[in-house]
Image 1 (spheres, protein in one colour):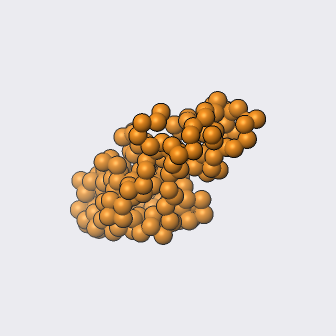
Image 2: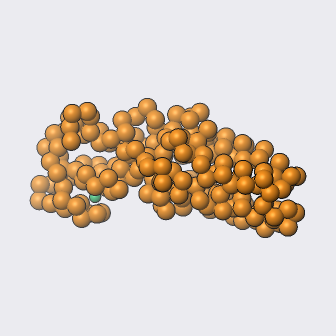
Image 3: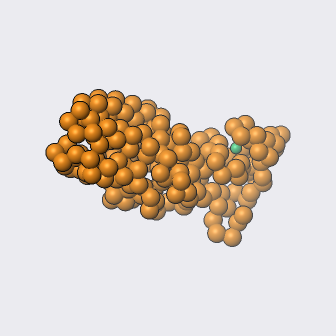
Length: 188
Ligand SMILES: [Zn+2]
């Protein structure tokens, strides 16, 4: 029987696969004692192609651009709406773009994420929108910040599959249709 790490925040099993050596007792990443699980009960969360993630992001970005155009013209209220859109876009588990492309926000191990995690992962984008609350002057501050964040997050997603927000919140993006856990029903 293979050994696995059951620590919910740990993604050792997803990244490195099952641990076969019986001499290993503790997870190399988080230090938790490993547990024996029958091989047929183990499912490793499916990883998502980066193109699919970027595609989902572009859909959300398109929605944000419309709000941003309104915010630039009408100021404070629309700017707050834009910041709130970014902050809460994943609140139901998937943003509009993710839902369209069958993606969902999960915890690192591939299990369900918490509402708190789904908000925290979007803080960088919400912060980038906040300067627009100040008319005219805000645009001059917000656009460079947003461009910088967009650049950093895109490079991180394409190179590591994990952007800054995912690191802060301990989240990953997975397929909604794939098994969300390492275990099938009945195993624990
Ligand atoms: Zn671990």
